[in-house]
Length: 410
Image (tube, rainbow, N blue to C red):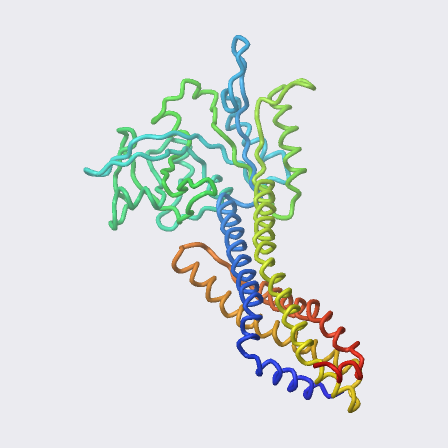
């Protein structure tokens, strides 16, 4: 069988009814464009969620204080100060899977630089906190051991805080007042952006943890070295679930909790949050693609409808071809090729429109989109599959026509 001759016959037949062929392709064009665009938008949203969660730090879990009960009234999570710096030291020392364990204190207050003031979050940290969060210092330096031990009055600013206090000026070595206490700015953090909850991670100032406790907030239990939370970074390649269980077991031992007694702390595994968010984003992407695929289904039905009309219109032609020696499979191939050409041509146009639409959404709507070769190949393959699937019935009907009956057809 001469495939090139079959293709030429199919193209000539479609060209005779160019307007009808174009209208038939519309369903495929819209379907392919919609599939590509929806997958690009869905994957863009998935990537954005992943980036936001990963900005918190990879392989990270957070140990939070538990609740307390007073006169029969149970307080919420974090209602009791149950964590200490010694807990963080023990976690880093005794659990092999842990890379660092960084204790943290949190608060908020007014910052003043010259005649400019700004209210922001104030964190008391150790150098391990930046390692746990994978947060680099863009300019300047970090805290030195003497500043950590001696409650030094030094501060590291986030990008947002530095911009609000100093504008375009260099904040390094400048003096700011935090809750009326003078501090020297020694470093500027790299930009982190927003969390998936919409919180600006760069709107922050960091000070040594002892400074936070003793100079700024005057914690009444300072001698116990209480902390608000502990950020635990697990070594790369280690099992997060096993590390979490070991941290839980160690904390229960340190807090002298009896078997069956409720934990006075909680552990949040950010890797599990990431997996949950990724799964949700994948479901959303598949849902959007499934909705867009309805247009492909409609386009396929349109192709089958037009091909059935074409078979009816060309019944006498089919009879003549069979009379001069054309076999049933030749007729089947001819109509299948026509349906495939319709689908693939519509698919190519749809790919161009889908890619252009995705770029336009990214530029003008400000949404994050992610075009992939896989999505384009999936859309093109779907178009070809639709052409073959919905073109097969009309092609088989044409191939099964009786030559004598076909020649008699008016």
